[in-house]
Length: 515
DNA sequence: GTAGGGTTAG
Image (tube, rainbow, N blue to C red; front, side, top):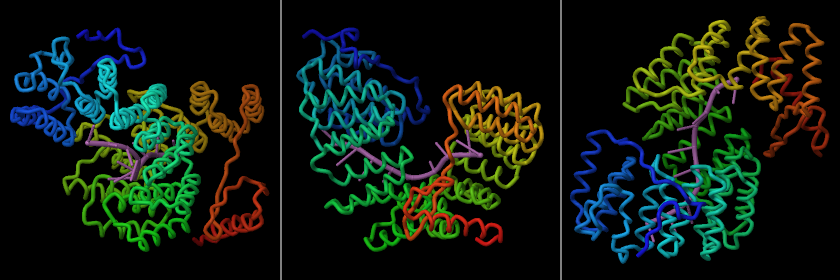
């Protein structure tokens, strides 16, 4: 049988097979090999492959090598390379959709070899094997995590061509794929075209809205779901909880809390984590703390949510203590938890502690700092009034500062009267992203505090010249359970009088220091 | 052997 060369593959799926360099520890690798030695049949090999993948190791190279080295059992010819598994001399009667699906899934579950899934998809098509309703969800999921919309669209077409466009699993994964690629509208189109929606269909679309920062739409859709026949499950509730966390509406969060009690939604680890985060983000830190202390198992996510929650409410000392407690329980901190602890230091003026944790991150845990971590450090220094040190730090960073960091610096220069440095960074900021309005606003504030009104209006002209306008800041209030968004002077909402009164009340409470 | 979920600087 003629076997296609890589170059004759359809160009849309023309990926090159690639394997990451050995990314297993030596002990783990030995362990895998020992396990693989015990396989004698294809099903046992597949079982062990699944086991290895579930243990979080990117073991595809090992597994595929094993496919070839167990050739006497499986009937494959010996080969040195995994890519030769499907060599021209391999007995093609062993090829079936199930085998390809298994290989495709193993690649989609790996961290560094996802594109290989598409190589095998191409090979599968070339063998005239029809993909089934298991194949597309695997591929679409890989597509979603690679955020490759073009590829996703082609897969969608392909699924339709194979008569799987209406399959429930395929449709649900399509919704996820489109929203993961940032196209909520396309996701919604698939959602609206679904004749029979199940719980996953609704949850996928709701989480799509949460992902695109449209929490209100997520909640609206959840309300629609309740009218429909479909019952939400634990995952749906977790998704709605994260929408509540984004909105910050306390009535909504109270409602969801009573819903969880009423419907006896089991308080699993994931649900408790989502609940904890929602409570902390909605300002109910004390309830979050008591929930956290009552949790029987706590993961790195539980700790990070709690640390971040404490940090944003100025309880930096407690956040730092919790971080240390976490390490005492042998939970290894990750990059996200370091963002939490660094921001705790920053919000509570703990400069030296911040530097200690920053060094611990690289020194003890070998975590490469990301731009967010550098951002925390710049924030830490500027909040403490150490503007010069912040500027030096920015210049010594191995990565270029992004607009967020530059805006932080410009703001600090304005507050602390470092106008000359401020102006220098300002120019860089506007050059960095000339379409971002907040860059001009940050710069205009510096000129304003220097009373250089002409320069400020020059900036304004430059913005108009480039077709930019300042987006008004909007606020939101909650009146009897509904969250209303409004801008200054906005009377378009039928309840604007109440909104204004409440906004006024909030202002007075602040003046009187009542919360 | 399939799909959706919880933590990320200002």
